[in-house]
Amino acid sequence: MPRYCFVSRVRTDRLDEYRRRHAAVWPELLRALRDTGWRDYSIFLGDDGLLVGCVEADDLAASQAAMGATDVNRRWQEEMALLFADGGRPDENWRLLDEVFNLDDQLATVPRDAARDEDR
Image (cartoon, rainbow, N blue to C red; front, side):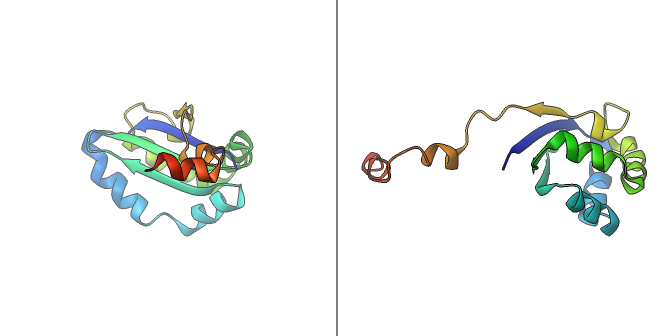
């Protein structure tokens, strides 16, 4: 399953509101995310406004396009735009990051006995 990570920036004077809104995301939006192929989706937020998101999707571009076609996403993005430092729709201002290390992927390539021997 492909994993994706992205970064963005929330306005530091709006961090509490961002956290509050994400503590109770609209059920309609949650269902739309699920139905458009988003899985194991998490968002992390630093006190400096740095936002890091991680998501699994078979095809992120297709999932984004499907989500972008929903009315609930349009409404959510309009409200969230006020909280972001970059302006515009937050879902269009992501910067995707390349995955350079994954523990499970690398462990899967190590023979079981070799991994155990190196731990000693």
